Amino acid sequence: EVQLVESGGGLVQPGGSLRLSCAASGFTFSSYWMSWVRQAPGKGLEWVANIKQDGSEKYYVDSVKGRFTISRDNAKNSLYLQMNSLRAEDTAVYYCARDRAVLRFFDYWGQGTLVTVSS
Amino acid sequence: SYVLTQPPSVSVAPGQTATIPCGGDNIGVKSVHWYQQRPGQAPVLVVYEDSDRPSGIPDRFSGSNSGDTASLAITRAAAGDEAVYYCQVWDGGPRHVVFGGGTRLTVL
Image (cartoon, rainbow over the protein chains, first blue to last red):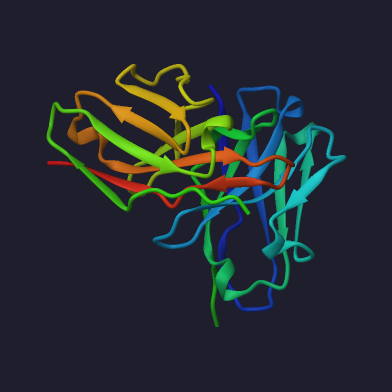
């Protein structure tokens, strides 16, 4: 059974940093692209970043470029999102999702972790 | 950037068929994917590549795509189908993932 479990969310002040983690199991993690998708409170879904199987390619939505860094550790079956210079508009539930790269859809999602940026 | 347009809400009577549209410029040439998100839960893929269903998704869920509109149909709608449904496409390039704004389905 595919499982994705996020952790690391919490309350952080504007300008602060946070590192999210996603532990994957039930599939060959190193064979798949992975993505982070977020959802602001009461709003829709927004793709944030993705990373190729070997970490050699990474892409970001414009609004987080230069502030967020996606990474992975295939030996630990883990995906990460380092978030720096956080803003109020980054407040959202962040989901880790398995990315079916050829057509870019997401066939498995974690339960999400809430990031709140507020003073 | 590419835009997907969904109505905010759709209502359907129990046992009837709900149809949720997703509009986009010449969306018929793209592959459309659909997600169901129940309150307080993560999204679940219900249709991919216009009309395919992942294992475990009942055949009451079906998708179509032509011209400027893709659609998700849910036959024999039940209370358990109440959720927000999102369409999604890939607009080319690894950064161009686009979601529609979501449609809340109410079964009443």
